[in-house]
Amino acid sequence: MHGRLKVRTSAEEAARKQKERNAKAAAFRAGMERILAKKERAELDEELMLLTGKILSANPDVAMLWNLRRQCLQTFAKADEETGGQSLFDKDLSFTEMCLQVNPKSYCAWHHRCWVLENCPTPNWDKEVELCTKYLKMDERNCMFFSCFNFKFLNQVIQLAVHCWDYRRYVVAKANVAPAKELEFCTEKIQNNFSNYSSWHYRSKLLPILHPNKEDPSRPISEEKLKEELELVLTAAFTDPGDSSAWFYQRWLLGYSQPELDLAAFRMDTAKGLAVVTFTRPVNLKHKDAKLEIEGLDSSANWQSACFDDSYSVTWILRDATPNLPNQLTFPLTFTDEFNQTHTLELNKTSPTELFAIRKPKFGTEFGVAVVDVLKAQLESCQQLLEFEPDSKWTLLTAALLSKAIDHAANHDQIVQYLEKLKNVDPMRTGYYQDLIGRWGTEVRLGQWIDGKGCPAERLDLSGIGLVHVAYEQYLAVASEIDLGGNKLAEKSLAKFGHFVFCKNLILKGNQIAGETEPKIRQICSGLQQLELV
Image (spheres, rainbow, N blue to C red):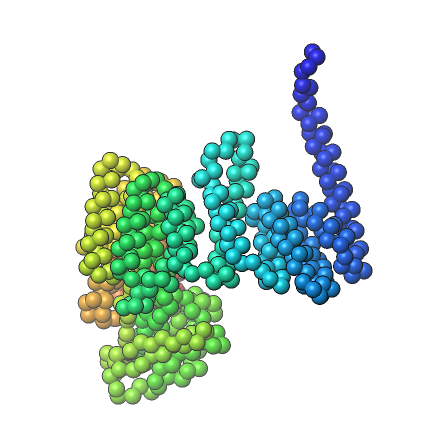
């Protein structure tokens, strides 16, 4: 048996590893005891740097040790009158680079690197940008040539690239790199690899700076640039329809994001002593800097959240509202938020005792004719792709989004078909697609309701649209009659009924809500006169 390598048994291997762990733990405890003793005596010297370096090189997530290194560096820098400790700072930059190779996700190491650059006499920000470029060239999908034996290294490269994008945004700001140059870098990265989430995301931050929409500041980029970006994203998406990165970027281009804070609706009935004000996003009217002003109403009125506490909510209710309304037909409502931003809504006097206003919500971006033509062409391309790959998840979802962006109301039936197909193609997200069906159906019906009379007495029909959760409750708060029949609402939806402040007639038949819940519903909706459950 001469010349053969002895293979350890599993028991021997486990004992060897345990022995190594014990030795490392003993060395760690001894090092920490020595460090803590020096810390107690305020000995900020070379030995402390050496001791902290040994531990951090193996475990860069001990924040206290980085703090001690910073104290040492500050002490050494004051003593070095000639260069201010520049060489020591440079040495610590190299040290952090080594630590990041051990753990690329170490926030302590990234933070220390930023501190070193901020505090050293002559930081080389351009070099940091070059370093980021070097690391980002090691993108995970460009490293697939490594064998499976290098998987651990490959994972480190992936993590380093992810964190390096955040660090790059920091250093380019310090180095005053032109946004146009950074956009070129993003374009290069995307052209090399369409499946680069971070680069697409960075692009969405740069474009509003370089190509703002001057005609409509609420839109992120100009329509001319938008057309170019839509072409780029279509090329990327069709190169690999199964990759989600380009599809997500397209959603940003189409304007699917959280709405800006604004007043949504208002209704007051002085005969009932009841008022409600709603917002596009949750606010806290109890915040010391928030202020709501209506002519004739005391600004210190006690508004209560519809969420049954004083937290953030889209709906706020005022009971015992007895203002002295002047004879004018319109009233300005002004809301100043906690960030001192002012929002206004013009209220109309619909009767001697009632004020009402509702702002038509923006459920998406309204595009010009030129962009709509591009979107129609892209939708046609998606439909062609679906002929060859009918079960392509991202293509189906994008076809739904494009149809919605082109003309939501006209295309709604087709949109629902796409989403129903997605429930079969992607069953793990059935609930998400069903929620979109109900939410988007609500958007269409709300648009029709508001485009009509926009009158609170008008019946709001939300029946049979596949609702699993009540959506856009801030607009339902001012409706007198709400039809939610024939949906998929369950008892867990009852909490949202607290927003139905002025609802007198509520139709719930054909849902998954049992008849015995009627007392609970009437307790939540105290103003109900008629309730249909079955």
